[in-house]
Length: 101
Image (cartoon, rainbow, N blue to C red; front, top):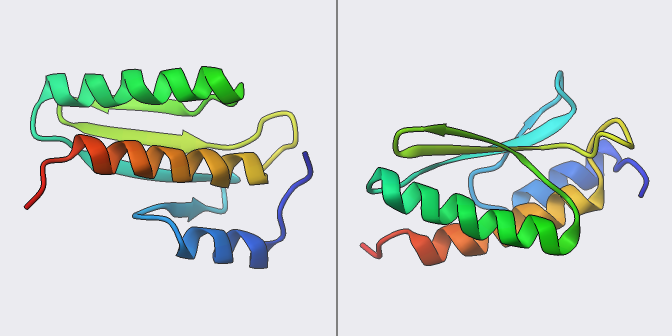
C-alpha cells in the first residue's frame, strides 16, 4: 500500500472525529476520553479485534481514562489508506462506547 499525498491525508482527516496529523512522526493520532478505566479497556479490546481482522495495528497508549491511538504504516514509512480506514473504524467503535449526552 502506497503513501498518501499531503492533500489526501488532509481530506481524509477532515472526515474523521478528532484525529490529528503528526507530520514529524509520519502518523495520525486521536485521544478518546472514556468515562472510566474499564470502559477504556473495553474500547481497546474492540479496537484490537478490528485490528486483527484487518491486519493493521495501531499503537495504543492507556492513561487511566484517556486512550490514545497512534497510527502509521511502518512498512510504507508513513500514512496509507489503511491508516485512514482503521481510523474510521476506531471512530465508529468510540462513538458506540461513549455515553450519549
